[in-house]
Image 1 (cartoon, helix red, strand yellow):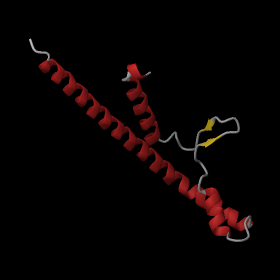
Image 2 (spheres, helix red, strand yellow):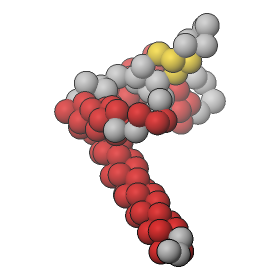
Image 3 (cartoon, helix red, strand yellow):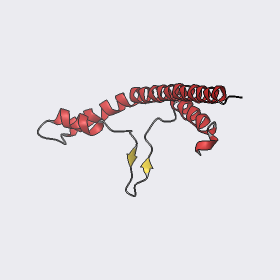
Image 4 (spheres, one colour):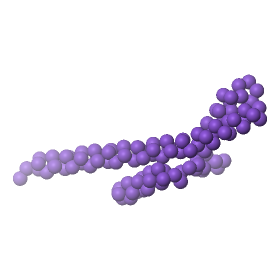
Length: 115
């Protein structure tokens, strides 16, 4: 009995599972993008208002509009705290973000050999 057909079958199944994993990862990245788009939509008016207040307070002298917008452009984003821990950004409780987080958890749980 030849081992070649068995080897070919094994290789084909590995390639198929890898293609499936890449499709899953692409789907998960798309969910992440939907989350980030929803967050950006919610954060935009808040950032705009904060930039407007900054300009009204005249915090910057040389180019107040550009400098205020730059300062407020990262408001609500995840950042690193003083001890190196990540401080989670705002609006990760939106439905799109909860769906993405849930999908990533399910995907991780489906891969016990990676844990």
